[in-house]
Every structure is written in structure tokens, then in C-alpha cells.
Image 1 (cartoon, rainbow, N blue to C red):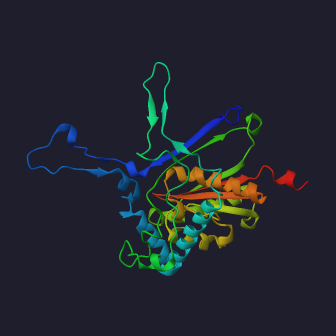
Image 2 (spheres, rainbow, N blue to C red):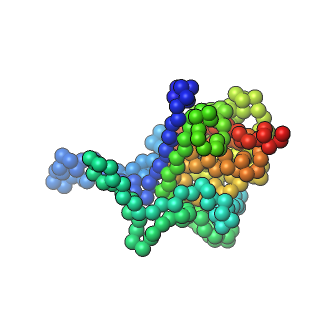
Amino acid sequence: MWAKAGQMALCVAAESMSRNPIAAYTHRNGFSLGAAVQFKDFLWEALYDPAPAMDMIATADHLAKRHGLSREAVDRYALLSHERALQSQVSGKWTEEVVPVSSERFALEGYQPRGIELPRGVEVVTQDSHPRATHLAALSRLRAIHANGVQTAGNSCAVVDGAAAALVGRASQSTSPVLAHLLASAVTGVAPEFMGIGPAPAIRLLLQRSGLALRDIGRLEINEAQAAQVLAVAQTLELDHERLNCLGGSLGLGHPLAATGLRLVMTLARQLRDTGLRYGIAAACVGGGQGMALLIENPHYASERV
């Protein structure tokens, strides 16, 4: 509604997974003698689905079994993601996208001051801290999280903090160069025990609505909650890795849940701009059994071919 009215919206997504609280729900009313003190970990709350009674790693193991994905296959994909993310960082491809953060104090007359304080000795943070070098032998030595599973700490996304922000609205109202045109979106539901496959039906529905074929899509950014999850999506869509998460994905960067969705779209938009390709799709799975996909277009595509 606000877009049709010519207004701009500031979309912000943030996740501080390292500071997710552990709460004692019964503490406020006191404890009976000998009664158990009940605590709830809100990080685990986000990573465990009570409906099928399994965590997100187990849903990826389900997909690995259904799609015939071996431990070696998921480790090799994880290595590719780690290598791409690190190479993109070293070559400066993330520089424009990452906003430097320093200790700051915000003051407004009539209100209490607020601020950001970095750890002692850290003056400014200019790049993601998670990308790092690894190799297949190191990944293969890691123990599977679940018995007979393929997912490990090395081929699953890390617990990280992150935030992203973007202005969305009519291009005619923007005083800055437009990064992408939003063309269509799609949301689908899937069985919660196979939640990671969600991007596949969402992308199919998106293509159906837009009248495009997968071959028309120059780049795809799909969240990498687990290596088996994204491989199952790629296998279902018959998608080659040359167009998928070309700068590295959440396995190499980390997956700060809500922030990842917006980050995927911004990364995708810059790839289309830099490569001169026209269409891109960003998609994500959602714990509980959903898939979401967004189609964007490079606003400079037509002019570049005149």
C-alpha cells in the first residue's frame, strides 16, 4: 500500500544469535522448596520444531536421506561455499555491501543517550568475522551431529550476529541509484520435517507467476542453513552451481536468520549489476515448513544493451 502511494519504506532485518537469552519463566513467582528451576534457551527455541519433534539439523539429514546425498557430497559443497566466501572477501567483493561499525553514542535532546560499544581494543569492524580457510580433510574429520546423519558443525551454518537494511519504494521517489526492481514474490508451505526444501516449490511458483523459466534466471541466492538442505533444493530444480551463491553463502558467512533474507537480495542485486545479467531470484527456507522466493530485475539491463 505504501509503495502504491509513492512512499518509501526502510526495511531492517537483524539477528543477535550470540545474545539470545536464556529465560527462567517461573522465577517471577518464586520457587517451592525442592522444585526444579525451569529455564528456556531462546536460541534453541528458534532451532527446534516441536511439531515433528526435531531440530533443524535433523530436517537436513531427512533431506539427505531422501535425495541420496552422501557425507562427502555435502562436505564438498560446504567447502565450495567457504572458499567462495573467503575469496569474495579477499578480493573486495563484499566491501560495498558491508557497513563499517564503530563505537558510537547517539544523543537526542529530551531522551536518554544510547550507543554502540565495541569490545576493548577494537576500534572498528569492517568485514565479516566468520569466513575462514578450510579444506576437505578437516571437514571430513568432524563428527556428525546426529547418528547416521551427514550434517556437522562444518557443513552447517554458524551461529552469528548480523543486520541488514534497505529502502524499498517507487524508483521515481529515490534520490539514489536504484539497485534492483522487485518484480514478484511467492510463499509456499512444505512438511516441517522437510522444511529445507521450501525454496524449491517457492521458486517454481514464482517462475509460474512471472512467466519465466529457470534458464532465464542469471543468478540465484538461496540460504544455506545446511549443505544437505541447499543441495536438495538444487537437485530438485536441476540447478547447476555456477549460478548459485556465486560469492559464497551462509555456510561460509553464517546465517543470522532474519538478516539473511535481506542480505540475499542485496547480494543478488549487486551481482546482477556487476555482471550485466537481467533476472535473479533470492529464496529461503523457513523453520516450521515454508519456502519464500523473490524475483528481481537489474534496472540497468535494457540501457546496457542499447
